[in-house]
Image (cartoon, one colour):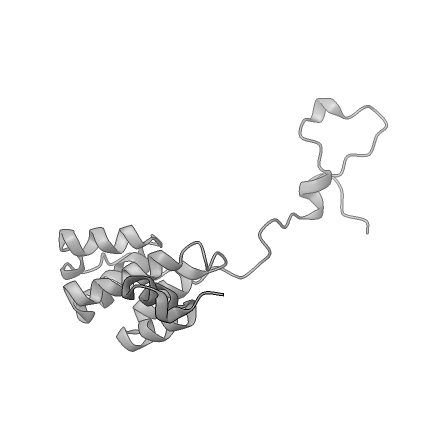
Length: 146
């Protein structure tokens, strides 16, 4: 077990900024930032934790208002990546109005990562592979029988 008193301050800061901390901090900045961080963390929480922390640190450099506008643009364009928000801020795109057709995309539904439908599993890839007299299990030619 690691004694946190022995860690340098930089390492301790990373360990204290958990996904819960990131979500709480994002909610304090604004609703678009909270939505962006929630989508960023998504299913792969530990893989994207560094990106969430880096995104929230941008508020120290650019301010909370600009970070909120950049997150709103990233969510509207469905570009959920820490580098995207950073580029938006560096290029000043957060100060430009959103295109009129850019509406925030709805949050993706939560589903297991590798789910397949019945027809994905049992539909022959090529019609030539089925022999005559063999039933084909495609949604267009027959109805499912479970």
